[in-house]
Image (cartoon, rainbow over all chains, first blue to last red; front, side, top):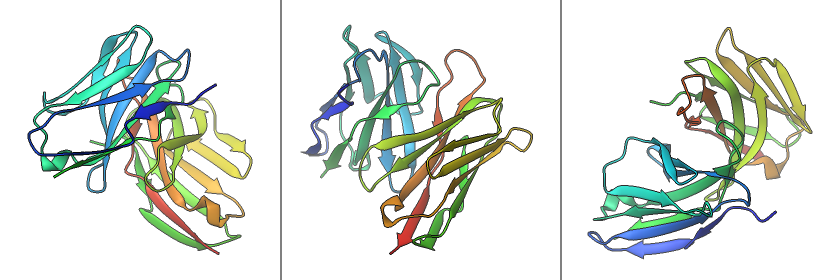
Length: 112
Length: 113
């Protein structure tokens, strides 16, 4: 099986812009979770989608949003970028809630 | 707040030695998982231990779980330089259908050749 893929791998944006990140889960996995990882805050949960429905949401402002399509692919969007949004954004897929998660390589976002 | 708290935050050992990492958590869990992350990459699942299990092995990895103390340990035997990475514990809490897997802040392991 192909692993979790994330695009793009690297991204440089300017403050105030918006960005869309994409994640393709492992075939057959219906759960997709997103995380933000920074040196200071560690790994922080953004949201989880299951069968196109947001099942869980972390403590992030409304500028962070996501969606999942019928083929389980997921996107997350960050609007009005701030310097503090610079981070590694990780996507993970799972076959069921609570089961092991399979992570993609991440998207490294730099906001200047 | 983080459910899992790893200890120590950083560990440096010589190749061939054993590495022991600990994780404590606060609420009842369905399972506890350990992940590894090499610098700047995605996390890799290592092992999952269910709440009704006390010990599990996978290759050079040994995980124990003590639900009465709400703690787990990960032992890597005969460490190698390639084991240098960050290690995270993650807990699947028993709090309902919409609970989420929660990660700790991680332990940085350095294995010196």
